[in-house]
Length: 187
Image (cartoon, rainbow, N blue to C red):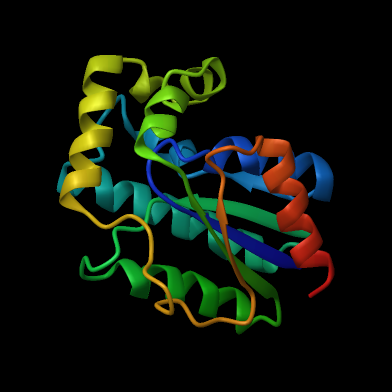
């Protein structure tokens, strides 16, 4: 089995690329908002209760994925580089899968802030992420997060043989997914 972790800032296209990658690979997409939206009617993700519940749900899914006979999964995550616990979280998921003999790939996406603001309003994003439908809040959250956190790595920060970084600013989700799938299938 293979796990592909798509990382990158808000609205960079992780879910949309993941959907295209799902079509190419037959892997199942588990985008980060699946659990966030499940919890949202009860707790905001910004609360300790909301974050704890989301993380417990994700861990339950990861446990099940590791034991399944599926060919692979795709997970998306906004990584705030430099924030305590973020790297450890991704490394923990990676170790969980690799300890079971599964392959893991980290794929980092980047795009300009202007392009991310445009993507923030796409029909596909709003369809699958109800919490993003308040566009004033969503755009403010996106820009404030970009100012407050470093949401892409710096050169040399990630040293993994199964790592790929792609600037998706001027590329379609299909083109990015094809590049990722080529990377995964050539090992």
